[in-house]
Length: 375
Image 1 (tube, one colour):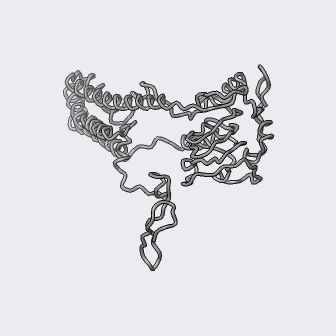
Image 2: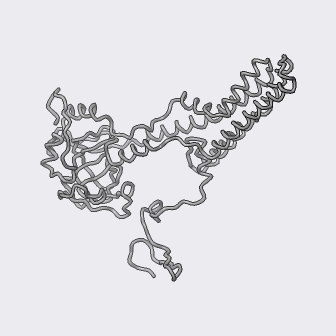
Image 3: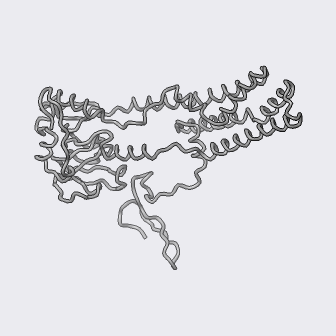
């Protein structure tokens, strides 16, 4: 419960999910009166407890992290080692060439990713949605990131729901939940209470979920989950937990080639030393190191980066934004996109257009949309 004034919050352990609670029970659980809403001080206190109503973990990386990302690959590390060796043997020309390649490669990759991150940051700032809530008996408009559990929120046609909420007053309300549940048709909502604790998410029609869209009607609801605690937030959290950085096939191939070349370089040095019966003189050492450096293709990594950068610029002309250069390879490797929700990606509609029956073959299905007309 939340106390008045400066009283501290005590976390309530839920005995039932919110679709099984009536509005009186919810008011008690969230310590709010739906006729007046929260006071500004209560809302501020809860904001410090629950945090901003936003997805966390995908913020813009710092310039330093982007720079380190450009240098953290095996080929670049081998080139840096080659620079150190070239300096050690006072081969200034070789050292200068390799440094130039490293700087060019790092600068191109850094500039591209930093520009993409700035663009993404600008898009985030442009899309700063607001929501209408009830505070101290008055309707006010607040940034959606400032919504807290216990807020009474107003919903109407065209609104994007700012947080998970329990409906307590509806008028012909329907919401599009294709983003969350995959349902193509708008879902009619109700204020009825359900008894089934294990009711599937799509059947909890007395709830409205964050990031879904109101397609028709209007309603009032009380928010019970925000940010990463919402259903969309839970999905984001699972994706963050399983999103381990995996190398692309090209990166794996370059790493494998780097290890092979490193082995060849070491073997070449040993052959030179062996030919001189391991009597290592300055001339022999200089020759061995020069031969080892010569086995490393300094320009390869720069060619790869420049090629990907050109691809990114080509996509940019098509209004596509690429945050990381390596994503370009993954995009280029796609040959087929398989989806069991035909039309959902493009129209939020799932329509059968072709079928196959054993022993009968393929059949085409005519008709558009959800109208029961066609052949």
